[in-house]
Image (cartoon, rainbow, N blue to C red; front, side, top):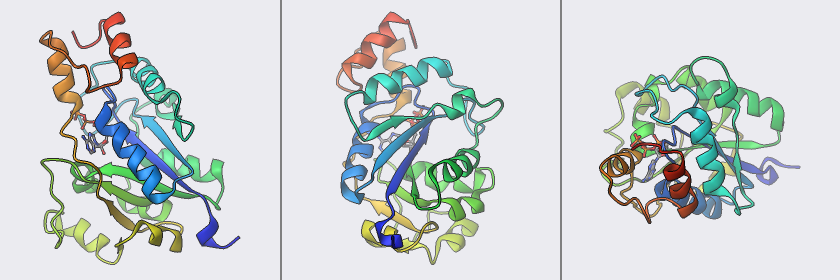
Length: 221
Ligand code: ATP
């Protein structure tokens, strides 16, 4: 089996507090455009780089389960929920590499906003030895063509890693970066939480099953 035939697997990490159509549409489009075998959704247990999630990790995982049900390519991976301490993506990627084997190519999916802050992640340079990155476009966050929006050390680390087509991700097992021009949906979990807290509708921003679960569990209100 040559490298070009290894299956590509997407890893979508996030707080998912709650997961919304911005996440789901990005995942669907990237699975299709890149030809990913699966997309693993990994809700962070205790994220280090942001506020403590409002909903418990169990609730957030359950919400992801409901949101992705019926999509055979989407998988809920609860490892960060059950791992003690702060959730680091590098730990999950190391584990997945061992579990799935060397003949699977891992592709970490982030929005532009998250990628710009990559240097704040634990062992961020090691990530390039473990996976490729696929960056989803997101309203309000622009990755200029000269990449000047990236901090200097990240821009330097990335300089030889950009590829112009998702197909090129098959030419190596890790370390490349592709930008996926996904549909721009200006949806954030922050806005959804605020709407629910204000008693406003979050319908059509999140799947109905998620909406019902949030209401029944009285989350964010
Ligand atoms: P919050 O508003 O609470 O900060 P969020 O909506 O940004 O949450 P996260 O769970 O923090 O959601 O995001 C997980 C990943 O999904 C990040 O890489 C983020 O950039 C990306 N993402 C979230 N919403 C969108 C969107 N609407 N379009 C593209 N990417 C998105």
